[in-house]
Length: 314
Image (cartoon, rainbow, N blue to C red):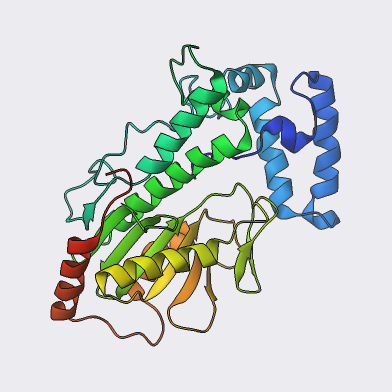
């Protein structure tokens, strides 16, 4: 998976300063390898993170490449490799075509609103009148405050989901960056034979779990209520279009949650917390006990949504 703007730096993982000597880095690495080793009671997630951190800054050559803004060790790729955080590969329909297979019909600009928010914040943070040649320069992004990096992480998450749902085929229709007046936007609305889904794409930069019907985690703001937020937004859009959502879906990066697919709540519509790798399967298979939609029903719902949906920023 691509590196997230919220990913901890190798220095943060190893618990050392960016000015640490190579000897200090080596000592920190060896200590953490012992402390996090699964056979010694440590965490496999932390153990792997320590290994990756060492691969990126363990030698002077790799460290110099990382400090210039690169995200892979020189032993794995050339010096020109860096996080692809710019918007050059994503268009209004979600992504460049990689093959000739029919794609889901798509409307709106995935991640557009989040990118606009990021660009405004990063320019304000750098300072008025200060030249900003590349707002996606990895070194600049990594130095920015977390709330700014979170905006970019959100944009990337929305674009990745757009690429996933585009592969569902012509039986599906997708709307991106959907306005829900008075509430947070709906990142995606997906309609297909298995139902109508309100989808939120997120990357909080750390693991999350379900607690008392809400998604929580150490990296979330205590005031965040992702489940309640998407449910309210879906209700607003549903009321305007006179339709019913089958489920609300919160998509997170792979490995961010203990369960690849977890259902939240007992009432209809339910909310589903799902890792990105399982999203397409969820949307193709549908929910247990929910009947598939016929052609006339799909046509009616699609028509209602097309007539009422408005997009953020338009």
